Length: 513
Image 1 (tube, one colour):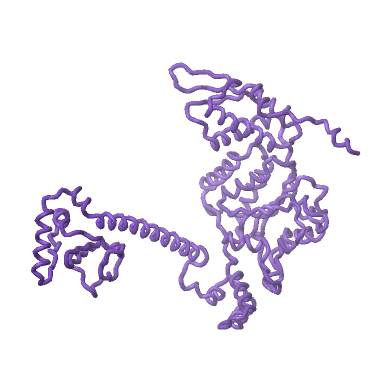
Image 2 (cartoon, one colour):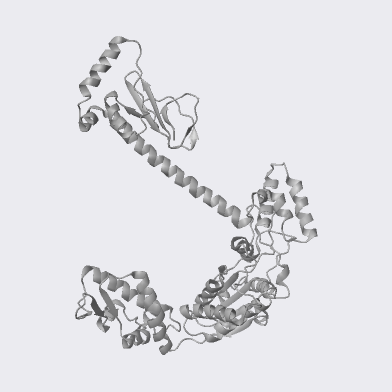
């Protein structure tokens, strides 16, 4: 580390301590930069700290290198005598007195601290920006050489005819700046983002020993059981799919259709599978969908055109084998249902989806055969019969009251309490009979557990509020001996206060007929 006088053409490193002495003025700079030169100081320069001459001795006691130089005076004896008198007058001053007499120093100290804060913020912003750039580079291509679009096209896992077509298009726009060429460049950049030939591999292979395979399947099954109660037929079908992917990683994709009432766990179980296999999960909601271009994209000739959702999912997932969940296909808008079901028939047919074409990426084949498609619907009568013939449909029975009670006790309540985080020192009890009461009297029209979950959340959210304001008149309190914790037992009166029973009388709707 350097410590000494400032020199006009000298480069300084981070941590160097630099001094400048002028007539009756003294400056110090603790360099915060990696390297570089420093300009001559002035009192408005935030990188320099102005030090009055009478404060020099204090800095000498701090600097252990003995490199702090004495101020250099000119030949004016009067000025020198005046400075010596000032020095003698203030040598005996205390540190606090010096600070009081040196408002410029205090101002410079404040400015210096503010400068450090700004510099620290700039450094953090640069670090975040560099981290994002490195992440994008690593995620997409992993090598600086791949920053060249032509190199990306050459290295794609495509047949020679497609590569030749893409390179011809690249050469036609190279060096030009027209709006059409800009669109073509965006088109090519979309192509190179598609992860052709790249699939997420399983953690095990068929050649692994049986113990390792058993542990793998046990982990997957435990993850499904952890999040979903029951649905054993769906779990078995999922495990069979996983087994097929292990024995034949190049096998064509799997299409699974889940048919059942809302709120029974169709979405949850597929998300749990994606988490267990560490596969990307994406969901497309078909409720009210009336435009097939959402799936297939718009032609490149249109202004503002872009690819469809399927291509967007592949470019975001960075793999060709994500899990794509097509939800509520029975709620497609009736005005365009025929066209949309026709596209779905092509997408989900394992003999056809290896050569899917997006309207935006015309003449480019996209292999969707590795994708695990999962379809979900509540009303099978509203699903196209031709599409149904290509699906393996699994009917999911709605849970019984006993199943709902178990789901509430083992899944819903623990998850809700984990989310709310009640005030410490309180234990909550809701008896089984009261859960059954909520199911029978408060959620009687719900075949699944969605409304039950909302009611339980409402009860515990209100309880959390009442605990904070000490308003627990309708809740039983019990104190355990030799313990500071309080047990709160939820009562039926408390439930009735929070959840009102809906009046099923709808005769008022006819009052204006």
